[in-house]
Amino acid sequence: MQTIIQETIQPAPSSQIMLDLVNLKKVYPTPNGEYVVLENLNLQIKKEEFITIIGHSGCGKTTMLSMMAGLNEISGGHISVLGKGITGPGPDRGVIFQQPSLMPWLTTIDNVMLGVKKVYPQATKKQREDICKYYLYKVGMESAFYKRASELSQGEQQRVGIARAFAIKPKVLLLDEPFGMLDSLTRGQLQDVLIDIWNKEKITAVMITHDVDEAIFLADRVVMMTSGPKAKIGDVLAIDFERPRTRKAILESENYYIYRKHLIDFLEH
View (cartoon, helix red, strand yellow):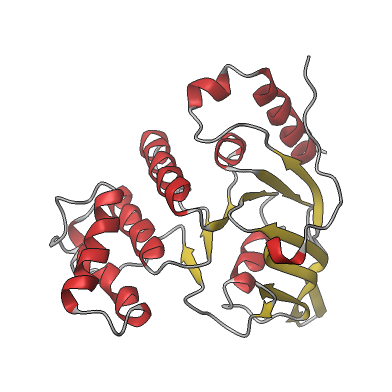
């Protein structure tokens, strides 16, 4: 039987590091004193890498992602993108949430346009429309450019959310369980949509998921977080499947079952 390729603790050259989390700490005040959600958390994510993050509920996964997005204050340590410390949200980081958070009264194209206008202020109206249509086409929403978001199903809304995130051309894509509330068929379809666009765009991606199979299918590495409080990185597993990937090929590989057992053993430990 083959053995899995374990992560070796060797820092990558700084020129290859897209996202760097150093001694990250997050503390929330409570009536009974400070509650330390994350402590001494260190993680380096390389350019064009797809990382999935798993861990038990309450271990601070979403807190960590929101700190990467600049939406949550850092209590200690620092986060940098290409060596530059983050001080708040920015167009270099696109975010896809579990809920798409679209403006329900706007059309799909206008929802995508909100970010495109800010990122491409010098572009003509036609150029900006072309960008929006290109990414909506990529997610299979070409027949719904002018439908209001309120008229779309949850899966369709999440497709628009994916298009909106890619359209601003971020350096880093942050995904907080984007398919967690969808049925299994829609979830599989949108995993394929996401990875197809990612394969072409090669944007560094960090995605939280509770689904072990999703974590393996999408990732170059799966990052496992310890349970809170004071959560940190407990283990990192390199996923050695060639890209582009197909579910059939992965399911036929004995390494898939070794990876899966490794992740489940960690979660059950």
